Length: 405
Image (cartoon, rainbow, N blue to C red; front, side, top):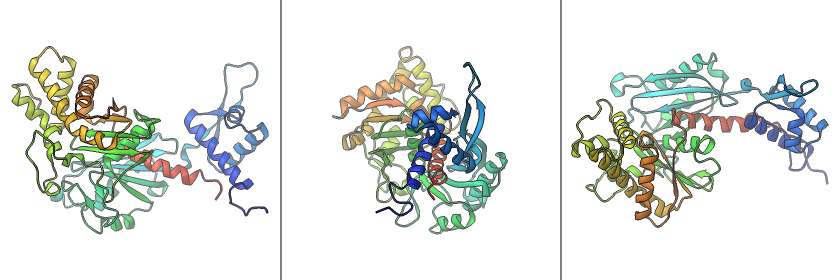
């Protein structure tokens, strides 16, 4: 019996599967010829030609240039049409909202940063979000209606059971039970929200140190200390969205913190968060501590110590003590999860480079039975924002590339 249209095995579905394969290959490799697409997909030349004609007519691919450097006339090249759809991402923290727009190929075409001074500004959260988004959209030369999807990254996580932001009491204005409904009413495109550290993990999985890894932990140390857990290739968020909030972990070496959600801190955060590095430096007698935000001071101190790990005893002790503190909390995490890989990210971890990574690896092997490989993250420029864009683009591509509809 012949299947109905749209069921597995029908010509329509098979064409859609071939279309998606070709589009993914164009995203991965860049411009390709008809012959090359045929070889990569296993399709005959006539079928590949029909496929490209179909995608070109649908506005998903463009004919662009010809091959060079070979005898005879050059072959026509095809690429994904970058203007077929656009996606946007927001990276939110208490100090600012950073926004960006990317075309369908992933190229960033517009950026904007909005100061978010907090409760005293009087500006409601919805207004801050729309202003930041509009700034990036304008920088891209687009309008709001051109944006297919938006992903918003914040500290903490929106509890899927209540719709309220949890684990981020330091983010003013974001805890209203009606906030998500208000955002939905103000935004003309579908939007999603995600924990900021989870988005960094997504960026590393798509573009960086965790590519081809389906089980890994990302440890993040910047304004806060947190983790993202990727198990079986998927983010594990937990029942309330709080999986990975390791800053609240009780750890030896620091007083027991109670009412952690209200305090917005915990033992591991107090012991090994970026704010602890300048404090430790003072205890060790280091005098030339950089001024400014503690994240920048911590990064500068770790970079300096890693550059000359054996030349200065105080800086040598700073690096070793920081590594031990970080490994102390990380040991609990890897003992429970036994991940294949641990990615170290955020300036509180990447500024020490390979020297700090090696010290944490050695300490972790003393403190935990599992021995995952530790690597320093590759995505350094605005990793939360890059992860938000990658998340928005993944869903956008699934929807735009579905030619079976």
